[in-house]
Length: 177
Image 1: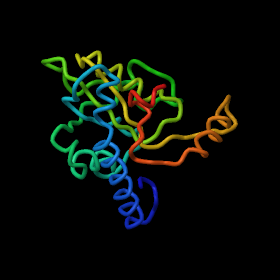
Image 2: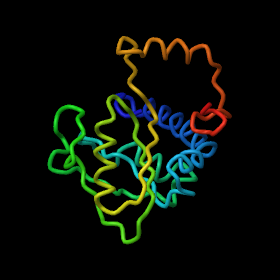
Image 3: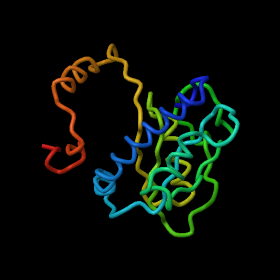
Image 4: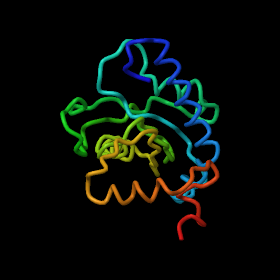
């Protein structure tokens, strides 16, 4: 959805990604808030991309214009910091900086399009907390999954046996048993 050379392919994949994220948030955003110990998120943002591109990042467009439940709460709350383009995926306190300070302690939902180690989104959460965000929670749309790492193969085999359903959320109280 970001890198294909064919604009039509990028558009088609972006619409599919938006549909998945829209439905997930409609069904489960309240579970994320509950797990964070809050009733709702005041603001929604996304992690800035590190590659130069013409125009807005596709995820920004999806979250700010396409998805109904995030459209009115979306803001570009993060920008690259001094180490924003640093190689690697370590958690760096200066990888990002908040675009503005929060006057009131806001609860922020951060959406990112991939998770490999979590370093970038954790760096983003640090910047938001430093700017006054009360609670920061994260939704990841995609995951780089290395089945050969640690116990990942066992997890993969267990997950494969479980039928997917939109109705089940890993954060629901009944699912935590």
